Image 1 (cartoon, helix red, strand yellow):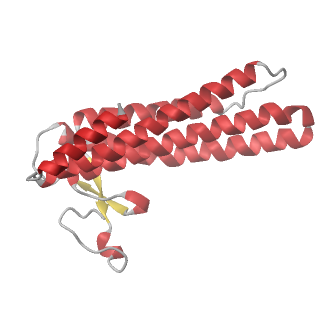
Image 2 (cartoon, helix red, strand yellow):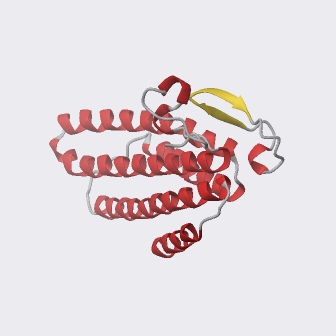
Image 3 (spheres, helix red, strand yellow):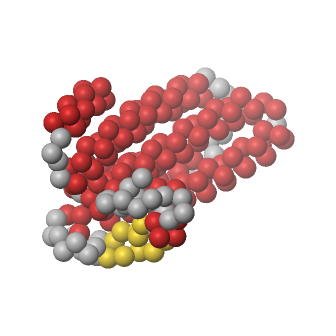
Length: 205
């Protein structure tokens, strides 16, 4: 599926004569398909960790692993919803959730390392839980990438790598789903990083 989408996007680019919005959509689609493919791979890796843990006796599931998994699932769901409905507010919520997942990861790692140090028999299952936690974190990272690309597509703003400092209301005057309600978008911080990036029509580098 990823290859089919990539080939279709390349054929479209060869034809040329697209509006800025259409060009951003094609570029975003190329990147989003890669992130979706990686999420699929990580889901397989996560399933392998579950199979390994089922064969280990005495494996104690970290208390915060379940809420972390729920947070990651919500991020993936919202990023896909934002893609389908061109909903920038939903994409922004995904970006805000990334730090929460990182906090879960840190606390789970700390918990596992403490128990593995005290009880050598917990090392093997502990390592599997560490890998599972890492897989969940990476899935969240890819969901964040998708959300960033949706914001680029809909608003023409690059919010990668912390290039977002203030929150602005939608000023496009559009009435589609991306501006429904109190839709908000983080402002591109190009002005604060002009010595690093050059300005462009869509503020994307």
